Image (tube, rainbow, N blue to C red; front, side, top):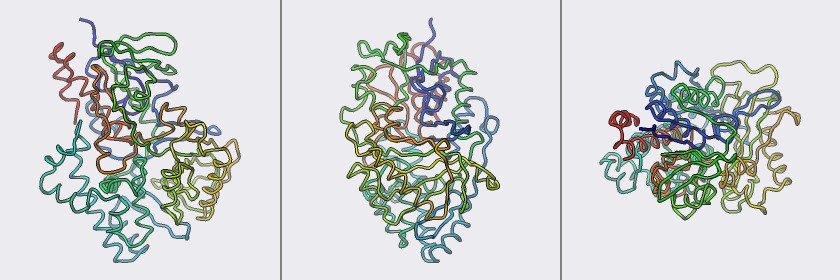
Length: 513
């Protein structure tokens, strides 16, 4: 009997994990990727001769990757060089104040005491305790679950979990909930930023996103070679187990006949027969019919609100005046204006928050003597595909000026020439990720029920499976990796495989954590 042929469309984090999971279980896997390297949003362009991570920069939820590597017969330690970061992030405000949060909770408590006083430190400790309870309540029935529902979640949480959610008020926004913990507006602003990890506004995102505080307290690591090293390693492991990768190859259409996928058509005219397809792209592309009208039925017809996009600068240049750590955040005073501009007015923020990943810092390294590698990022509206968007060259230049002025006001001077800077706009992201408008996190997580609105791995089209940040459990590197595992598990449990091979069906049962 012929091998079951799987085509994975997209070599982002979810596609790489799916390919590895399926190849190690004996399926014939071909990965199609339009870019010339794996990673998807984990991009690493060369700027003035230096490779700079210009997408996700934070490695968290290590247990996800421990399980993936263990299932592949190896370990994270054997394949990657990770360094635990003692400082989770360094925060600066335009009023001249600053605060470090640490991997050591006691050090963070002492830092908050010095920053905002003992009463606020006690409230900070209470917030961290609640964040831990929320994470513990939701990890199993939501994060690890293949297709959670509001009703099913309520039944699985148990009395303690339900009490935890009742206490934070799941119908509250994150911003509202944080107001019950913090009196210092700077701390409320700092933790409200967690909503942007999901591409959302703190004024509309659910309070449950406070669990991200616990995710960071569980550990933040840097990866030698950057986050792109993780993508390259997953591709290498998948190839070693038989997966075939085709880079610089664009998928033109996923052929569907009689309600089942049949093949994948490439831009160069090739037709790849496929018994199953794992689509690792934004589901908006399916809804828009970009891969064929027959794929529209794979996702709900109504388009959800888009998440945040970004305006970024990848820089290789000297800095002075401020001691950066690996992860740094620069805050303006009027935080609400940023999200009014983006989500209400659909324009670049006039007073943006600036995130800076200093990729040659952290883990106790000495400050670079010369040029260092930076990724500077501000949030932006995902309207990069709109001909009359507000993102004119003048508006982009103004946002850049304001962003770099904020950093200088806080003490950071970046001495960069034009050749040392690569700017990426929402229009650029819209071209890289079709049908998104540049949205980097799929749909916005606005409102409690939005957490259940993302499609799961199984689609209504037989043989088509979905994976990536626009499907459950959501955006972010570890979440996308989990979605890749869930897509592989769903495929392995499909009737086409379970009827065919007891060996494959058995191995498929071990593919979820």
